[in-house]
Length: 138
Image 1 (cartoon, helix red, strand yellow):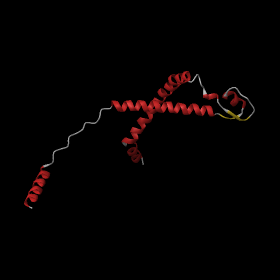
Image 2 (spheres, rainbow, N blue to C red):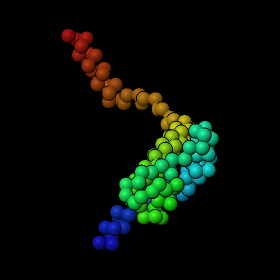
Image 3 (cartoon, one colour):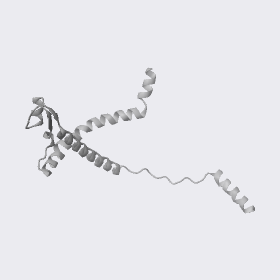
Image 4 (cartoon, rainbow, N blue to C red):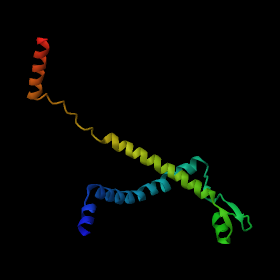
């Protein structure tokens, strides 16, 4: 069983996947700070400081509450759609940034060198000569 596991774990695709997950986890911090500290303030400036996190609907528990945190602290049953909207906006920002990064990386990659087709082998040349002689005879 150990040998089978070792064989599985040492396959190239498993190791590549592990490296990708580790790099992805460390890259998450970079992307999160890019969204939170750089892009969201710019979006807030453009939209006039719109903050969707305090948009909610009280389903049960009185109200009105000034913030989502106040409603949660009071124990009200709420539908916090603003947090969801913020998460969706953040997702689209992250997806766009990652798309742009991957696109630039793909542009930097050098294309694989194209190889000229190999000349036909001597066997093929000989067969072509025989074919041509047979066609000339007919």
